[in-house]
Structures are given as C-alpha cells and as structure tokens.
Amino acid sequence: MNELLNNEFDPKNFFSSFFRTSKTILLSPKVFFQGMRRDGGFLNPFLYLLSCIVFHVLIFGLLQKNPAFMLRTLLLGLIFPLITAGILFLIITKVFKASGPYETAFRVNAYASAVNLLSWLPIIGLLFEFYRIYLIVLGLSFAFSIKMTQAFLAIVMTMAIYIIAAGAISHFTG
Image 1 (cartoon, helix red, strand yellow):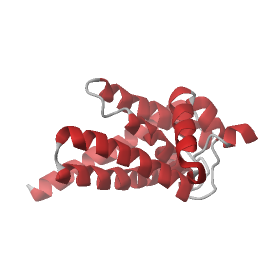
Image 2 (tube, rainbow, N blue to C red):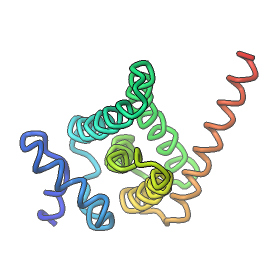
Image 3 (tube, one colour):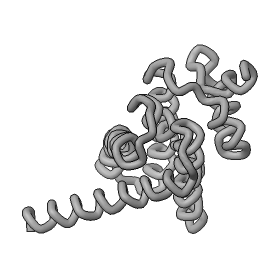
C-alpha cells in the first residue's frame, strides 16, 4: 500500500513526482486511484492541478496567440474543478448515501487534470476529455466505495446541472 501512495504528487520533488504521477494516472489509473489517499490536504493535489492547467494554457495559448483567452482558460481551469468537486460530493453523499469528505472529490478531480497534458492536441484532444470522465468515474468509485455506474450517474447529473445553469444565465443575460 505504501508503494501506491508514493504515486501521489509531491512538490518537493516536482519534476520526477509530476512525471510519475501523470504517467500513473494516465496509464495505470486503477493503481493510482486505489492508492490515492482520501485526505491529506488540498495543497499537493491543487498544485498538481495548477501545474497541469498551466502546461495546457501555455501550449494551447501559444497555438491560439491570445493572452485574454489564456487568462480566461487559466481561471476557469482553476475554478471549475473546485465547483465540480462540490457538486459531485453533494450528489455522491446525498443521493447515493456514500460517505467521505469534499476533499476526496476534489483530489479525484485534481488528479484527473492529468488529461490537460494531452487534451490540447488537435482532434484527439476531445477523446482525452472523454478519458477524463472515465478517470473521474474510476476515481470516485474507488474513493467513495461506490459502483462505477453511480459515479457515472453523478457525473451525468453534474453535467445536467451545468447545462441548466448555463441556460439560466443565458436566459437572464440575453
């Protein structure tokens, strides 16, 4: 079990840890999420998330050559995983009656951001976004001890909430 925990990001050994964590998440997600701690602080997962987003923004931003777009992408990339984790946490704990802290849902979302390292690639980037959904389903199922179908339904419900919210915002702002 100790070996599995060593796959989590440790900013003290930034580059080796970032590479090892990303590789494990992308190529052996079951191993990673089975060994992921359910708690232990927000800082390391947040720094991992931030690193993945900055990488994505720099690569994608250089391709777009649009600084305003880069800033918006960076801010949304930091805000939405926090909101998504909160929505998923509420659905999982209230609808599916699983137990666990918000931090666990955040950790799953933060580590699933490994997809950002590849999602900037033209055409196949969309496939990696679907892989992100799989990673979150897998992570939530291990972290909250729920069925993968329940984790998938939680994601579908979260997407529905985002669509309804976007529609409401669009309706009121014209």
